[in-house]
Length: 286
Image (cartoon, rainbow, N blue to C red; front, side, top):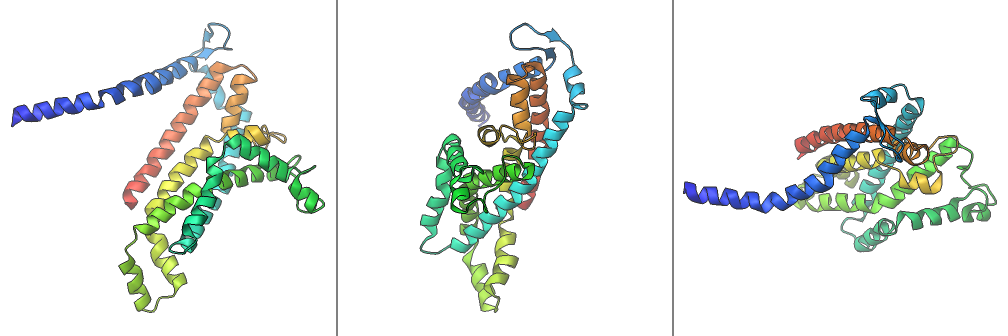
């Protein structure tokens, strides 16, 4: 028995060895390289000068870095509640209806289109100068995101929610399918109204899905970059310069790759810490 157990254990190790090697090559080694670069004053065209933890210390006195973190936090506070609320609302309302599959397909379509193509369509629709919405309403419904910081950040948030809403609906829909129908039917027999069933039974039982999407949405908010790059380039006046875009600016516009590597490591630590905290909540809600 002991010999068979050892053979099974050895077979198990050989089975996971390719995955471990792949992680070391494609994740571990690049991560070590980034950590090494973060200790250099390096512009990308030379060998760089070793500065130790100076880049990390500079982050705590960098006003632009602090502002980008604050902008990312505000962006998350706008995006997450809107994303979660709309996802659960649509999923609950279409659950069990004849149009459920059609609505899911339509809502998921934006996620299948490339972000670049979606950004172009949004620019054509919502441009404050010559956008379709501005022309049709003669400027009364145009969002002044070209020169107003709050409007630009709101536009990016709405674009992000629109792009990912279908995924949120699918997650909540899967959670709804796992709720025992006996519980809901028992509540109806006891005279509970549909609004009470949704508020006191369905939504509490969807807590694992809520926590899961909270984790995913928070990570997306911390790593947001593409929509900002394509629509606003961090403007106007730095109002949409989230941490991902500030990282891009530092590395590829200011050519401070060592400092950008330090930003990457710090963002990785923040992301991992937040994800671990959320994962504990997810485990507790299961």
